[in-house]
Amino acid sequence: MTSQNSFASRVAPSGAFHSRVSRSGAAALVVGLALALSGCNSGGSPGPGGTSSQMADETPTATAAATPTSTPSAVYKPADATGPAQNVPVPVLPEVAKTETKEGAEAFVRFWYENLSFGYETGNTETLDKISDPACVFCTGLRDGIAEAWSQGRWISGGKIETPVVTATVEPGAGPFVVVQVIQSVIEIRNPDGSLLQKPTPATNTGSRAGLSFGSSGWTMTDLGLIR
Image 1 (cartoon, rainbow, N blue to C red):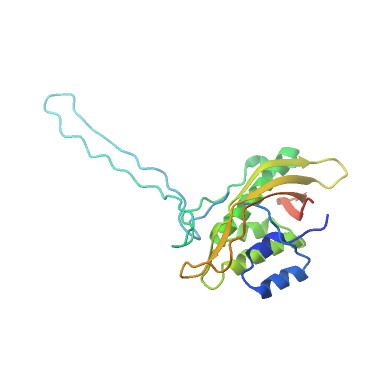
Image 2: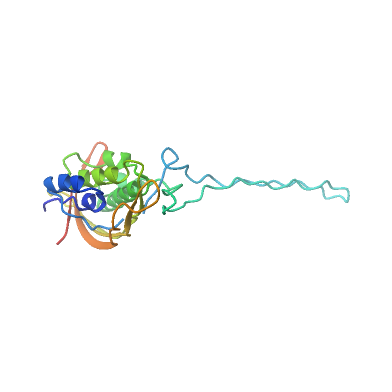
């Protein structure tokens, strides 16, 4: 299947960028996006709740109990017209996703889309870069689209992704691939003053086919395209 950079054109805020993606063979990807923010980019990850202690004497002359204390956890706040998302949870690679199995391939693809969703919410695609093959045109288009949308002080509101159905085919002698149902919420690109850069991109529910390879560093997304 020919890869198509549809996500990228969905978030491209300018005609010039849209043309650049189109020239690379990208079509508008209406794939929909659950994600997460690390403490190193748009906010700290939730911290553990604090503990409380209390000391009391069982005699009538017992001293007053110590006042319980707690450490507030960072609370996730989605993006809106007032600013980018805050405290987005960072996707964590499941142990099974490190195995060259059907279950491992499925878990990896879910993780890949979690990082794509994370990129929409935070503008950070560092992990997505690491787990995507440079030859994956569609993957590159998505990352370029996110970078363009987040440039010049802008941010993305919405665009969260869910993958309710992920089915892998891993057979000896054949390249593994995964069929994915991708649901993505409405995408809004916000200017620094909170206004919309362009008309919001509607929510979508589509199917995609992901090609994978497994090597010394684990799974890598090698190809991605819409199922038509």
